[in-house]
Length: 241
Image (cartoon, rainbow, N blue to C red; front, side, top):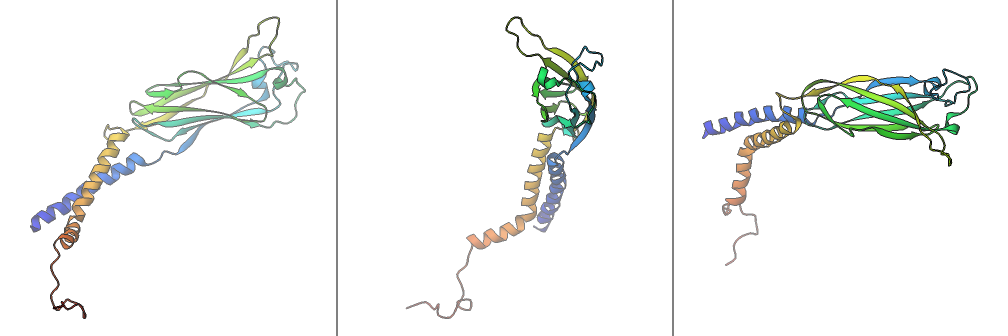
């Protein structure tokens, strides 16, 4: 009997030694890391085709493109990549027509990824308003481990006001195409979900094996209660004739 309890003891610790690290690895949250931080000046955002002419419409403020990506992604898990166009106030420069009064500015973004599934896979469009940030987001899921290269394509579309006499067509300009990397990880080639399942099962079984002597004593007292002896009976509990 003692050898059986000893085997349960060491087997329980072995399962906990396997299960707890698996649970920690499979559930540890990935922090968001800033992978791109670049400033677009009003000249970068000006209406294309003017060759820097002071009459060319441009916004009065610049923008900062900030891209945040997870520090790592477990194989088979979903994580999020976020991109934000933040407003950057500018000092007063040469007087130009305000772009927001002459055109509707639309930001067009597309994420290109290798070795990962991502959604949305097509372009994302969002109207840009003066003084307000614009945000984009993509879900990514790696299908193989390793360092993955990603590219974010940012275009601006300049939509003129509608003309009742003839159709209008927006102009399009590439603003930025930064590249960055995301690391996809696995545990002995296994994805996140199998590792979490193994960790949960091993932890539960190991805990049950280590606690089995205590559980046996508790259950034994609950289901195998013996009648009290006269010495154990309290005063006043003598049986009545």
